[in-house]
Image (cartoon, rainbow, N blue to C red; front, side, top):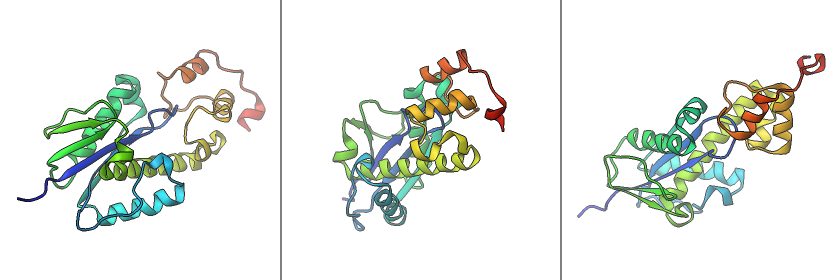
Length: 200
């Protein structure tokens, strides 16, 4: 009897103030194990990048999908995260036998699906998905940083650090911000006067 294909699913980017929430789905190949898989948050950026390359090379199938800032504002962050997860699973090139999702909520899928709290530290396929999702979202934020260097996105990746909040208070809210998030709402409601120095 053939081994059931397990698909791990995880997301990155629920907490930041801007950019998409990114999800990944991974079906690992039992014949090509990958050493070092772990919760992406416990790994350095260099190790994540190395493992992401191995996952893309060795997995039976992998997919990355997202839900945009506009979808996050329209649906809320939880529903948008589940939407990104569903898109990732549905665009895999082979069908999974079972889907394991990090957390306590599952997207609606046509496959058997199970949520595992702390799954990114327990299930290798979920660990692999967490690494792909994190590296993909970080790459997106680094690209946005090139276009908007005044916001410091390459450093804080969109999270609500003091430096980030000060930057958007000074420079304003761009279209890739999540306007339903409280810190962004507050800045939109109480914008600081712009000066010549801000626009120089």
